[in-house]
Length: 344
Image (cartoon, rainbow, N blue to C red):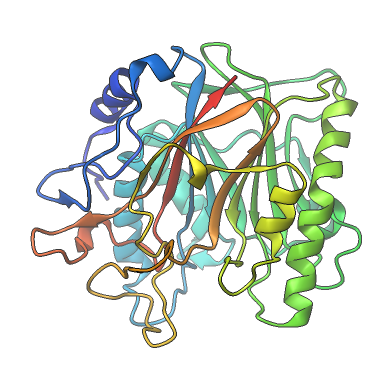
């Protein structure tokens, strides 16, 4: 596996222009011009790029290509993402040869500069989890904090974060205390993958998590003497506004969280970030799915609270000249969602 080089070029573009959008890479054509954040809108060193992506199980169902094909594509998208902090969903402990999918992902992102935070408190290892949520950080721009007597990164369970959740309490939640190498932070990053069930039980799981995650994060921060620090919550929420107008995303906003899609600079917001419709069920369409009348379907979110403002937001799409997906970047039935956030 040899992902195309590009991190250095992308990092330079982000540093100079603050780009968060669909990028021209190799022979691919962007779905729209990459939005620029005016230099006057940013303070050097005080904004970071966050991304979330459900990469689909190593056993992703047909017509998905096998993981042996998709792994190169996933590496390529991550390499060109420009993300400083990345949340992955469905990066699992399912076997891929003699290792797991998550171990394989870590092996091919390491040469790109990405690594998992050092997990210092693994409740999943102790009590068991459905391993579906991970975090990656780019070492050139972000570092993990360390505390005396308190862990700074770990895996826990939805039921630990939200005790009132009734089902799927063992779904994994990844968390880490981070700061930029330029000194921005500290902040708490949280990666989640909430219930996929389209049932009352599934909705209770998602909504209750949204109701209780704020107090959990506040308690975590207070225990480390960091009350009021920024928090970024990312992942596959399995909830979208049209189907679930009172879903977890709205619960979080009502509790004071911001949604990065409300950034002043946006790209591809009418392209579905999940490649399904009521009639298109393969997850692997030839072309991006558009919504002409409202914001496109999305179940992957980047949300934030405490001293953060969104600068730019994009659904990341790579297309051929004829408008079809470029297969070289089609690694999942989801599209990556990416946002540049300003720490105020």
